[in-house]
Amino acid sequence: MWVNCGFYHISFFRSYTQTACIFLILTLAIHKNYLGVRFSKLFFGLFSFLFLFNPVAFAQQNICIDSTNSPEELSLAINPNSVNKIAAGSNITNFYNSVDTGRTWKHGTMKSPYGVYGDPTLTCDTAGNFYFIHLSSPTDGSWLDRMVIQKSTDGGISWSDGTFTGLNKAKNEDKPGVVVDFSHSQYRNHIYLSWTQFDKYMSHIPTDSSHILFSGSEDAGQTWSDPIRLDNKGGDCLDGDFTDEGAVPCVGPEGEIYLTWAGPNGLIFKKSLDGGKTWSPKEKKIANIIGGKIVIIHNCR
Image 1 (cartoon, rainbow, N blue to C red):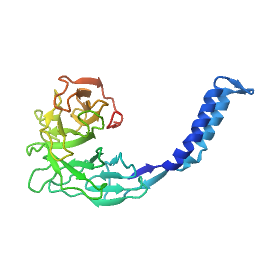
Image 2 (image 1 turned 120 degrees about the horizontal axis):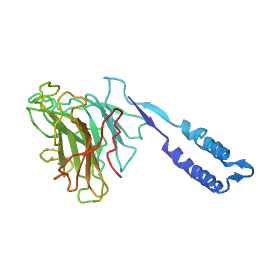
Image 3 (image 1 turned 45 degrees about the horizontal axis):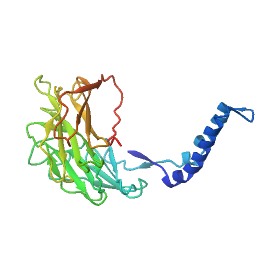
Image 4 (image 1 turned 120 degrees about the vertical axis):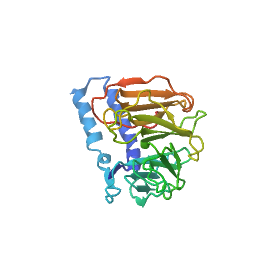
C-alpha cells in the first residue's frame, strides 16, 4: 500500500517563480513573433523548463505505509486544521496515522465490541476529529448487521469503541460512504453516512434485494438518525452490475446533500436540502454505466 507524498514547502516556494514565468508567457502571447522566435516554440521551451526539468518534479516520493496483513481498500482522511495529521485504514482491521504529512506512519489494529470486518471509510470533522466507519462482525450479533463508527480525538492514535447505526440482524449492511458538512450552513459539522443493505448478501433468490440507506449525526458521531431508504427500485444481491451499491454522499456550499450510487438503472442521483431529513422523491438518472472507475470527491467545495 503506497501513498504519494510531495515536499510542499519546496513546491510552495517555487510556485512564485513559476507564476512569474507563466505571466511572462501570457504576456508574450500578445506578440506572437517575439524576437523572431515563433511563440509556439517559445511556449514549449519554457513549459518544458518549468514543469519537466523543475527539481520539484523530482521531489515526489512513494511512501510505503504498510506491507503486512495484505492491506487493501485503503481510505484516508486529512485533518483540515492541521494538514500534517493524516489517518488511514485498510482491510480488514488495519489503521494508520501520520503526524508529518505522510512521510512516516504508525500502524495499529482496530478493535470494537461490535467487531471489525473491513470496508474502512474515513473522514475528519471541522474540529479535527477522525471517524473510521467499517462493517461489523459482533460476537453477540450477526455478521454485517450494522454500520460501526469509531472516533479518534488524538489524530488517529487511539479510537473509541464506537457507536453504530442501521442495526438489523436479518440483513447485511455493506459498502459505506461518508462525508462531513464543511459548509457554513446550519448543518455545519453534521456527518452523513450512506451504504447498501442486502436482504442477504450474494443471494440468488429473485425476491431478495439491495437498497441504499442513509443516516446522519448532528452531535459529532455520538448518536445517529434512524436509517431511511433512498432508492425507489432495489437491485439484486449479487454484488454486481444489477446491485444498488457504491453510494457516495457529497455536501454543497449551502449545506445541501448530494448522493449518487450505481444500480440496475444506471448511475443515480438524489439530493436533500434539509440535512438529510427529506430527499427528492424521484431518482434522477445521470447516465448508463458502461465500465470504468469511480472517483470519489467527498466535499463539493
